[in-house]
Amino acid sequence: MWILMYVFSYSVSPAATNDRAEWRLLPTVVFQEFSNEERCRAAKSILEGSLKDAGAKLRSGLEDLKSIGKADPAQIIIAFNVECLPK
Image (cartoon, rainbow, N blue to C red; front, side, top):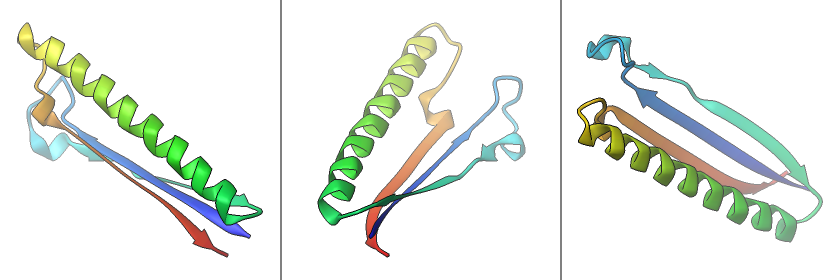
């Protein structure tokens, strides 16, 4: 058996405050079992692509808001890690 471990977290400054003490870090950890390494690696590849696309869309949206003075992409940090590990 193989385990796909997915860790995702983000930190963002809420729109209501610029006080960095109000920023939050919200980690999410998910485990999924696979019967073999090949299936785990295929899922890992798809998941990594989806996370990269989501991050790019979020940053693009923030850039649009920045252009009208409503947001700053520097106020958000997106991080993820996806691993296939033998069980």
